[in-house]
Image (cartoon, rainbow, N blue to C red; front, side, top):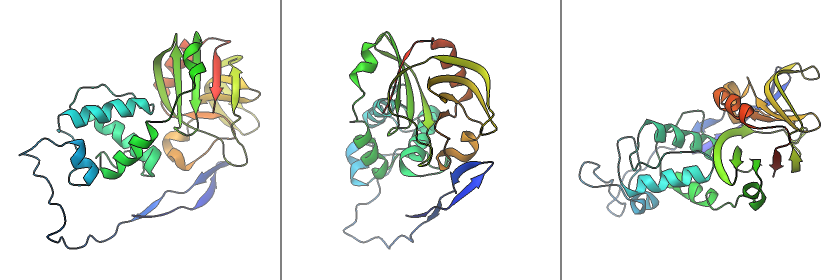
Length: 248
């Protein structure tokens, strides 16, 4: 599937225009190609997904679904391990496909061979040990595009995040939350910054009104943008001044 991107400026914010996907016309099936599995006759296994014989979809049950649910949580998309591909799992797969595979928001809720290859790779990424050794910590991964909140070594919550553009990079390093503002506003960029938690100069973790609209096609001016309004509000209330924060 080919992809094209364009760049533009919206409201002073650098964005990459929506991806255009050009689907190839499927070739006629041959005798050597694996036949699609009849969903009513057999449980879909990870082996089937790996080989491209089948995809996991809403309504599926079994060990393959449990495996996917566990690995989604490992990449910061917290998913209850039920073994049932329910609405929550489908929406979380869509979040994964958007974040790591370039789809638009909620565009693809099915788990395919290509989803598995990417999920298996990303789930092997190690979380810095220091995040789990602190009494409380915000562990902010640019690669996995997520802000994790740990308390006494246990994962409390994880929120999808986006970061600064090439011209406004989000700083890496070990920091501490030194300021919190419920209803903040950037006079420099004329942008609301509700539920802000400052960790380095003017850079903060905060809710972004643009993130839900632009998705990962947009970028911040260096701050860590959060899309989930309820999630960041809850995290903001939990995180205290002085909490350790690592951006990597």
